[in-house]
Length: 54
Image (tube, rainbow, N blue to C red; front, top):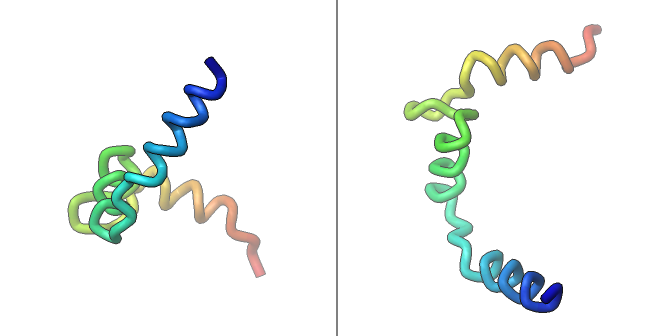
């Protein structure tokens, strides 16, 4: 059973669309990017909080 899961996962990775457009679509579906390509406000705040000051 484990071998079958690994085989299916590897097949999914190999057949995945790795184009820039596909990556942007995945980020939009996840709610990280807006349709204009900007980061959503929630993620902008998270990154600003993590950035070290000075």
